[in-house]
Amino acid sequence: MTAASRFLSMSKSNYDAVVIGSGPNGLAAAITLARSGRSVLVIEAAPEVGGGLRTSELTLPGYLHDHCSAVHPMAVATGFFRSLPLEQHGLQWIQPKIPLAHPLDDGSAAVLRRSVPETGAVRRDGRFTPDEGSYQWLMAPIVQNWETIESEVLAPPRPRIPPHLRTLVSFGWKAIQPATRLAQEFKSEATKALFSGIAAHSILPLTERGTSAAGLLLAAAGHVAGWPIPRGGSRGIAVALASYFQSLGGEVETGWTVRSLDELPAAPLVLCDTGPHALAEIAGNRLPDSFKNALRRFRYGGAAFKLDWALDGPIPWTNPACREAGTVHVGGSLAEIAASEASLGASPASSEIPKRPFVLVAQQSLFDNTRAPDGRHTGWAYCHVPNGAHFDAKAEAEMAASIENQVERFAPGFKDRILARCVRTPARLEEENPNLVGGDIAGGSMNLRQLLFRPTRRLYGTPAKGLYLCSASTPPGGGVHGLCGYYAALQAIRKADS
Ligand SMILES: Cc1cc2nc3c(=O)[nH]c(=O)nc-3n(C[C@H](O)[C@H](O)[C@H](O)COP(=O)(O)OP(=O)(O)OC[C@H]3O[C@@H](n4cnc5c(N)ncnc54)[C@H](O)[C@@H]3O)c2cc1C
Image 1 (spheres, helix red, strand yellow):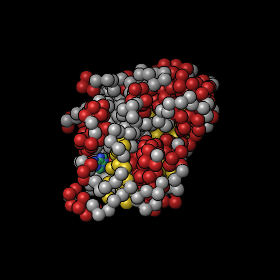
Image 2 (cartoon, protein in one colour):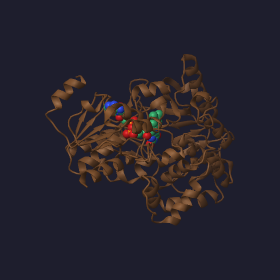
Image 3 (cartoon, protein in one colour):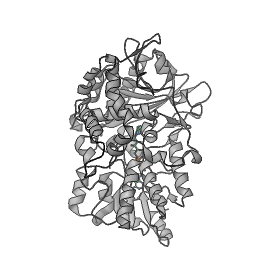
Image 4 (cartoon, helix red, strand yellow):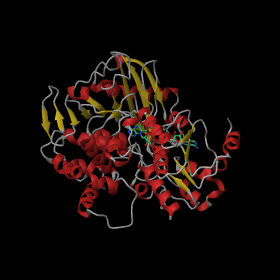
C-alpha cells in the first residue's frame, strides 16, 4: 500500500498521538501515551516492530541471531521497563551465571559478577583474586545509591539543585574523567582492562572526558540487576512491548516509511523515534530553518562492524570463567583497548580502522537453548569502527578476519567451529534501519556536549506544536531502556494537558 492510499484509508480515523518508529523508545513513548488514556498509532518502516530489537536466522536455519541489541543491563536496571507487565506478555529474562568476562593473554580473565566483592580476576585454573579494594571503593557507593543515580543521571537534565547532591557530586567526579585516567585507580591490570572494556561502550576514544560514565553505569547496572538476555532473542522484548501496547488499545502499522508529516492521519501529538537529521527532513516546513539547521548539526558517532556466527560447539575459551559468561570483552589490556578505540576520533574521514579491534562478544546459546539446534551454538560480535567507514569486499573480509583472530587469541580452535557467518558493515546496518546513520549504534555521539543537549537545548521538544523527538538521539541516549521515549511522552503529555 502506498503512503497516499494508506492516508486515504486512514484519514477517517483521528488519533490523539502518532509515533513514527517502533524501536524500544518508540514503543515506550506509545505505551506512555496510551497509559494516559490517549488513542495512539505506531507506524514502522520495517515489516515488523522492534528497531534494534530484532532476532532472526541470519546464518543457517535454526540459528537465531540478534540483529542489534543482545544484552540488556539498562533494560532491567532502570525503572520504565520494570514498571510494565512485560513478563505477562511473554518476556522471559535469562541471567547468565557471570554477566561479563574479559580474558587476558596470561590465561586469566577479569570477571564482573553480581556481587561487587566477587568482582576481580579468575586464573586459568579457576582460582579467584579480588581487586584489593580499589574496585569496591569506586563501585560500592554507586551501587548503593543506584536509585538516586538512575533517576538523576539517566534522565533529562533539569534546571534545579538535585536532591542527594553529595552522591551525585561523588559520581560526577568519577564519571567526568577519561576512562584511561580513572582506570589508574585500580591496582590490578585485570581490573584496569575490565573497566576500560566496559567504558568502551561509550564508543569514544577512552582518553575523552566523560568516558568513565559508561564504564561506571554499565558496571553498576551489572551489580544491581545483571546483564541479562531475553529468552528467544531480543525480539522478545519488542513483541512484549507491542503486545502490552495493543492491550491498551494501541494500533500498529508496519511496512510504512514516513517521508513527510503530511502523510500522517490527524493527531495533535507526533513523536518521532528517528534521528534528528531525519526529523528535519520529515518535518519539512513545519520547522523553522534555524531549528532544522540545529538538528543537522547533531553529530553521529562511532559505528559497528558486526559478525554473527553459527558454531558447531561453544566458543572454546581458555579461561573457565569466559565459558560461563553471557558477554565476553575481547581486546586484552587497557592500553590495547584504548589504542583500538582511539580510531573513533572526531574526524571520521581521517580515522583508521583498528587492526586489533576491541570486540564485544555475546554467547546467548550457552544459556538459551532456543537459539540453536541441540549441541550447536551462536556467537554475536561487533567492534567499533569510524562512522560511515566504507568496506569493499576485500576490506570486509580483512575486518571479519581481524575480529575472528581476536577471539581465536583467547579461544584457540574457535575458527574451526564456524559453520557460517553473517557480516554486517556500517552501510548494511543503516540499510536495515535508517536510525543507524553511518552505522552509529547509539543514536549519535555520546560526547559530553551531546549528552547534555541531545539533540538540541530543547531536548525532546521542537518549535512545532505537538511535534517531539523520542529516539536514542534524546536523553539519556543509546541502549535499550525505553527512557528516551518515556521522558519524551511525559513532556508531550504535560504540555498538551497544561
Ligand atoms: C549492532 C548493535 C548492537 C547493539 N547492542 C546493544 C546491546 O547489547 N544492548 C543495548 O542495550 N543496546 C544495544 N544496541 C543499541 C540499541 O539497539 C539502540 O540504542 C536502541 O535500539 C535505540 O532505540 P530507538 O527506539 O531509539 O531506535 P531504534 O531501535 O533504532 O528504532 C527505530 C525504529 O524506527 C523506524 N523508523 C525510522 N525512521 C522511520 C520512518 N521515517 N518511518 C517509519 N519508521 C521509521 C526504524 O525502522 C526502527 O525500527 C545495539 C545497537 C546495534 C546496532
